[in-house]
Length: 330
Image (cartoon, rainbow, N blue to C red; front, side, top):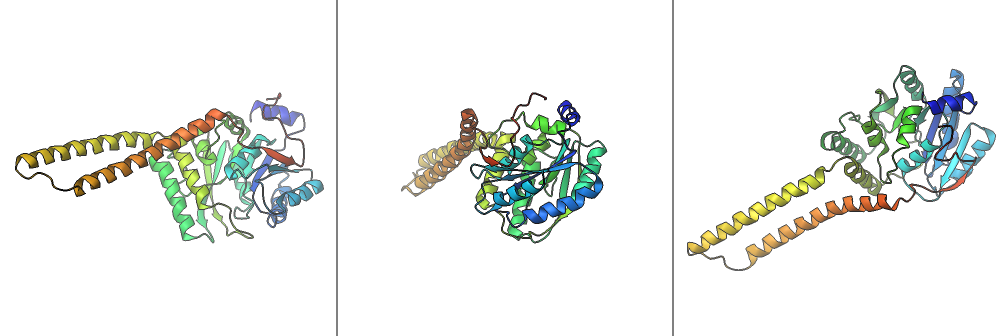
C-alpha cells in the first residue's frame, strides 16, 4: 500500500475497497447492481465504497445514483458534463477513489460482483494489478467477439503488449500504488487497459464468465471501438509511421523499375501508347499517398490534442464534494 493510502486510512477516510462503475443509460441496472455488491461484500467485513461515474446519460441514471447515495453514505456519484467514453469515465472515478485498492466494474450486470472476492484474494497475496479475464462471453454478437479478438491480437502482436490478456479484460483491480502512478499520465486519448498493462507492476489474473446483459443496450458503438483501436496503436507504437517509410521506399523503387522498363521498351521499338497505364499508376500511387497522409494525420491530431492540454473530462454534478486532483496528503 502507498503512503497516500496509509495516511488516508489513519485518518479514517479510506475503505479497503473502492468499486468504480462507469454508467451510461443504466438507470434500470444500478439498483440491482447495488444490491448485488452489498450481498457480496457485506458478509466479508471488508469496508467498501461505490463510486458511480455517469457518462452524461440521457435517462434517469444520475437521479437513481443520487437516491442510492442519499440512502447509503458509502455510495458517491459523479455526472460528467459530456459523454466522454467509458475509459475517461473510469479515469475520473480512479482520481476520486479513496480505497487501498479499487475494482472497476461495469454497470450492465455482465461482470458478476462475486468475482471481486477472487480479485481481493489475489491482491492480498501481493498482486498490484489483477485482471478478470473473460473465459467465456454469454449473449454477445459474433461481430462483437470478432472485433474483440482483432483488437487484442493487434495489441499483443503488433503493438507489442504481450502481457495483455489474449481474450480481453475490462474488469480488474488496482492497488493504491498503481492508482497513484496512473494519475501521472495526462493523456487525453487513451486505452486504460493498454496503459495499465504497459505500466508493469506485479500483475496476475483470474478467469470468469462474462454474463449476458440484463437490461438496455450497449453504448459501445462501432465508432467508439474504432477510436479505441486507433488510440491504442498511436499511443504505444510508431510502427504505422515506420511502415509508411518502408512502403514509400517500395513504391518509389517500383516506379523506377517501371520507368526503366518503359525506356527499354521504347528503345526496342515499342513505345508506350495511350494513357491507360499512366492513369492506373497515378491513381494507385495517389490513393496510397492519401492513405499514408491519413495515418500521419492521426498522429498529428493526437499531438495537437495533447498540446492543447484540455481536461479529459468536466464534472457537471456530484452527490458529494470531490477530492482535488492533487491532494496534500499524497
